[in-house]
Image (tube, rainbow, N blue to C red; front, top):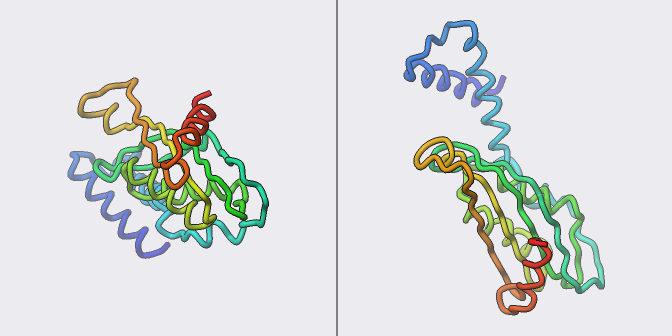
Length: 187
């Protein structure tokens, strides 16, 4: 076992005790170990780089029309409460001589989602990463997510969701391009 997981286990044991739990009861004996392992997995985006995730899957292409990858499911933890937010991302770009391997768009979403986040930052990080890798003429990202920090605590609104968008390049400057993207992801 690595030392960081061992430290996390000890800290989860302490947290459970501070909550008033009997950490020696049967149902909780392995909970600190499972929680530490789960948290390391849920935050594994910190161990990844953009270069590793895209792995050179950038290909020359004369394609010049919008590329859209819709409904990429995402799971993240809000940095304010460490509670999940769950949703989907729609990512588009306009190639400028290069196209990115299809699965790499989803891997970019996952890399940033698997970090403690707010949705607004997540949207921007994804857009800027796709821009950086592809050199696209424009990038658009829309994320719609449900936040457990709003559903399970606080105002407890079960049917609320949050939508964020980031438009770069042609998507920001050209209303027709932006409208085409939004109609594709909302249709």
